[in-house]
Image (cartoon, rainbow, N blue to C red; front, side):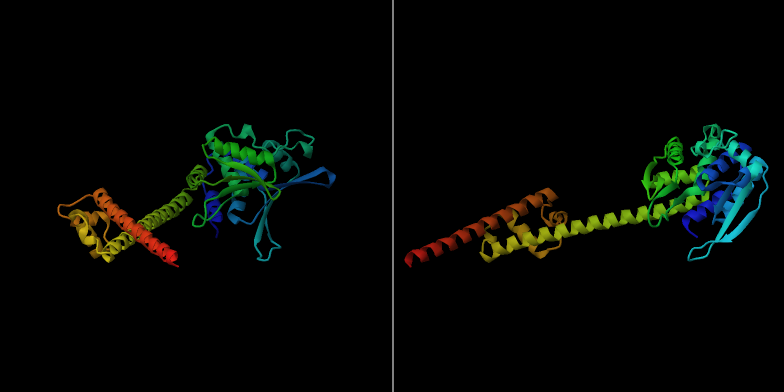
Length: 331
């Protein structure tokens, strides 16, 4: 079972607090997953179709609580490669007409399909309870959240722009920053921030999903923090090694030219210490000196040793060049 399926299963089992909340929730479901069709002899039909058995049970229960409609749930096999059950709930004729009027999809008795309103019905979401119910119904109808182990992404997919923008506005009223994009002939209201996805789950009443999500998020953040520390320590260690090798090379140049013993006492002592303790940090070298010296002091002295070695190399190079010049003159 996917993470989204687990959430919808949990939401389907949440308590229905009132008739008006049930009405708000079912009005979201019919807008996000309902099909309205006109048949012969002026007949009309509203159909809900879902592969989630828990959502189908929820629709059945909502219709009974909000409108006293008792209908049948039929089961069909999908035509996909992996055969799944498809649960279908139908409302027909006069019940369908009343249902469309009550959910504010239709507002005229002539039922002109061009005048149907698939946006968020403001009259049905006047209080916090109903707004939360509408968001819950929208998620069960067209929402999904990716597995937090892989990525943080929540979205509501709708074929109608007014519905997608209405969901976005509702989420923003709860300080959940959602955005709308057009993708593959659909309008997608999406959320990327992990904290806001957690807020969405809490808003809908998916308390177990919130705990699961937060556990995964905590583990991932801890793992990322450990990786950052390790990477930082590795980078620092590499830097220490590179610096140490450069310093040792400079000291070896001085030793090669028998210049190390001509250094002032404080530089000579440090030079021999660095040769003996090639992997020691500046702090550790400073603690070995008598009297002890801080990091900045040790760094200053080692830089001075490197400058002396660099000058020595320049003089050596200049001497070689002079010898080559003399040789060419003689020729």
